[in-house]
Length: 109
Image (cartoon, rainbow, N blue to C red):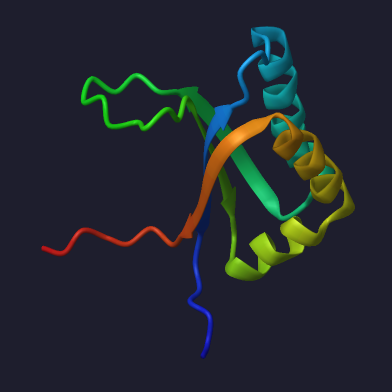
């Protein structure tokens, strides 16, 4: 099957382990953001904390979004040594997480 072309959003929804300090979370976020400088396929990064009033978060507290030019770029990034090393550090502090990659679609008119 041919891969779709276009910008790809890589979204990680996370809940950190109990006992992880805000300082440790800040260090994880800074290191994640620095992957933009270390891995060419990653074009941008943004993050935020859950602020939903719907209370449907199921304990997830943080969202991280990265942008890539293609699915091939995501694949290259996932295998990049800087990402592999970071992922070990990130997962060691994670209680649970979800990862979704998607190609933004226009709203049908």
